[in-house]
Length: 371
Image (cartoon, rainbow, N blue to C red; front, side, top):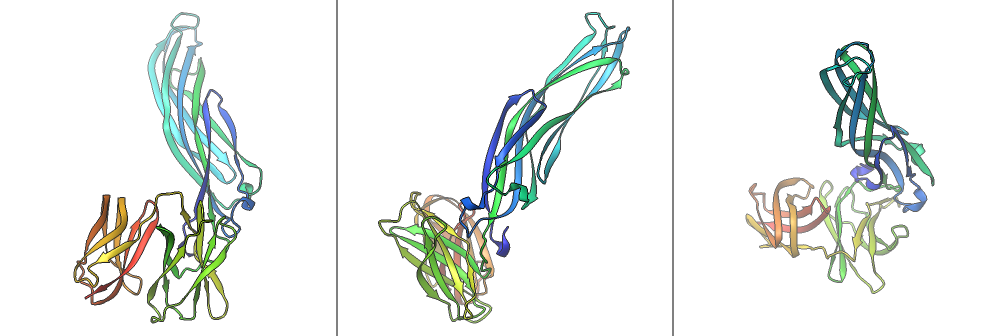
């Protein structure tokens, strides 16, 4: 999580190791190069490594004593993955073999084979570190995987020789979590951007701690170079409350691919803060806005999406102080309406109704009046 409660943006890369008998494997990832990312959003916050490993082990044991002996063995193997600031060693396989009687050395029954055993079957683990400087640059950062351990006797003595063969493979995923480099306005919340026909609707909420703010809507085609496209003055509501804002950007023929939007907030002293950046993919299927009816509402309100929806949504009633008074989870299955009963019987007045999709991180906001 970045400053101001803004979720960090993840960038992941993976390395897959084909099954191998090697007990030590070295592999590398690309370092995080800030120059390849938007200058306003290229601060490395933390790094996480996730691994999924599978392995098979076969153990051969030969009795070297000149008499038959009953042996009992413990096979203990452990994965270890290490890199700068990260050391994962939480996957261990233990198995007891025997008791088994092995003949005197040189006789046909002086050897036994255990396995093959699945020592790790898609076993997953993870580790993380902070903004370690070893991960910054235009080169690579190295990791090492080793499988450690061996066979010991629990019964029968030490007159034996062993040969353990392991075949290991898996996938390692390194994720860089990136935060904005500019100061973010913590008072701007619920910022969303979605397409409706030939325009983009921007919505956000902001605390009314003073009424001399100016909100400039900024737009970029590459996520780096932003230009102002319009301004919205601050609301005149009382301090301690929140106001909902909306701006519509009309698409032009030159708008293709992904568009980037952010809000620049300037106070009366000229201090500037920014919202998080929202991306609208014009090649993706359209996103819907919402309407409500009846409005004003007494107790039951119907939420109408502009397009048919699929998935789980959360409907929330929010007062002017930004408090969520009640919420309801709904499942949309190819329909565009959802009902919401105001069970708390809120006092008459102006409220906000928010519909959010936690999977796609989309959210839609509208005003309702309760009678």
